[in-house]
Length: 596
Image (tube, rainbow, N blue to C red; front, side, top):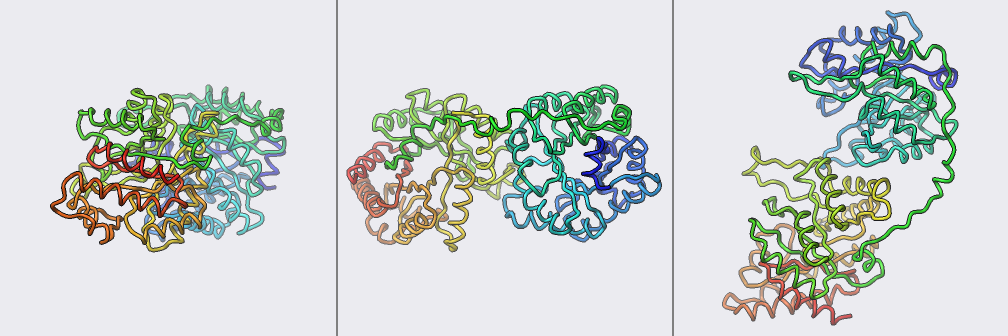
């Protein structure tokens, strides 16, 4: 009898934690998965303890077996095969009818790796498990759903008898690390035919997970797994401890069973004692009916979304004007303040503040955006760079800005830290811009309601492969990107490239204009700024001995000419302010407006 039939007949008891219990039991500096190769007897012993406690399904000790822990592919494969062997040996030595499932955790995706590389690694792991005779796959502690459709489909393709369980990690508020809400996960997993059972593990203790589940409704026929942590971790003399005692944990699990859980077990901090306590209360019980009322009604709900003034104008097809102001390197904010007032008076649509370009520290972009809005209630768009904050910090930044009325953002990966600083100052890059856009999309759907955030992306149009650039644009649009801001445009070649990308993608493109304020400035942009192409025809319009007034007249003329050539393709113009010369930028805006 396979596990799905078992779950329909009676509640199925899984094992508890491997990693935290291994550390507690053996006081080892190794990760539990490393012991597959270095100390397999220890892993066999833990499996046997969980079987002895009543577990009817045990997971292989492979949660973290991937390139992060085993960069060598052959060693990774050996770790999987050894883990399966240890699980099989434990079942055989205990002489009980116990199922074995492959444990596969999320594989971290560096910003340099594309989706196909990660999917290939999941496929590789699945292939090894299938060769070892494993037919149950537990994809556990996931924070996003994007990998589940392809990897679950691949499991079914390898063998029609394979069963797939997916488990997601939510915090006590009901959201995953990547912003997916519990309700959204329930809806998505119940619609996926290649998933046999789904549920939640890690992230929350039994009490909080029970309270979250009480608020959910489930399709009648779904199979639900619930594996909470043993409370919340605390550090004691350098080791992580969990507080929930087995009997308290079991009492909370009793209430979770009453909500209709079909399969239960334990995650971080749980031990064989916790599993034994659950085993005593399960007996041979069948699962309780789940709360199902209200699903249809909730699925048909419509929210009233309030766009920002900037997005509303952009979506109406009007040309928008975006102006970037430099954040100060020091605490002197007077030039920034005067710029805000001058741009507000000229009616620009939104002011944008860059997030430490070239990885040189400036005043925080989001805090300056709040400051600017407090001065004049102007629309402001801070840049949000992936370089400087982990996901916790990025989420906090967006929420803090939102509370202060900032709902427009430019999401960028961010310039890398200069080589001279490496070792003392390092980039974070928890994710790239596309993945954070996906995260923001889920924040909008789950927690921001009728006042969502809107975000754009940077368009680096100068790559050799035009099709690859267009494909990346489409991925950003799919992730909720509402528009693109380009680098400053100075060449006929780049003007043509923008027009082609507009035709290929249909995306809203706000074209970059940057006035060159002197011959020296023009030469610097031509020779020292990567990714920016300044034509010789531009350089020829400047002279080393020009007056400031002459140079500014030339800058206005050149920006106007570029805007004129782009006008039919551009959804707006993005002006970068050189050396705080806001008056110059306002002159250019006034000139371009006359094209309307």
